[in-house]
Length: 237
Image 1 (cartoon, rainbow, N blue to C red):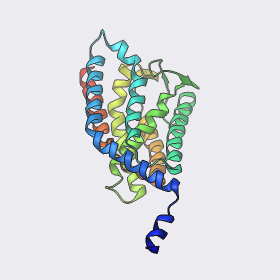
Image 2: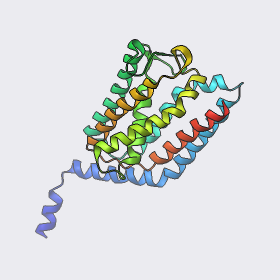
Image 3: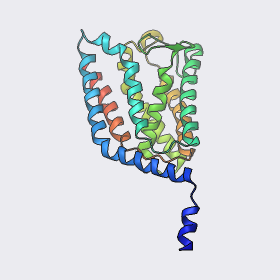
């Protein structure tokens, strides 16, 4: 009896409350993952149709920032561990990604000479704020895919960065066609992919070193949907 009382008293009311909340959130995530996968599927399918129909294309271009926010919002809804390490990683992913783009737009390093159009929304230092969201989203998705499969952090960071470069190969032609950004001379330089790899590697390393639970029930499906979205638009546009 005394041992039971000691065990119960070893947890504060706050810890018990947090445990119950965590269990409840996990239950909600598990019970609704299929629903949100359906939402993602419909949303990306409608996006493909809208971007491929000339009369609808301008409206769907204008909805691109909302598309990014919704994708990140659903991803974070299924995130399981909101501790300081995760907040640190998220902040660094956004700031390093956004900062590298500001540097790139103003100096040509590390990606090359390019400029952003107005499609991606509000800009700060001539770079859309949504670009920081895009970096966070892509690093999380690719990092989550490798988290259980690759044990070595440095190898995983390299593989994650390589996967992001592969995804960028799909994104670039679509982004140019939809006027997200444009390259000087109309050609995508090799430096874009080298710079993309370097910046992605750094953020991936932070992701791997950050101590938070990386399980996410929706991440893999969302990444697959994103890849299919850009692959199909490469064919259609």
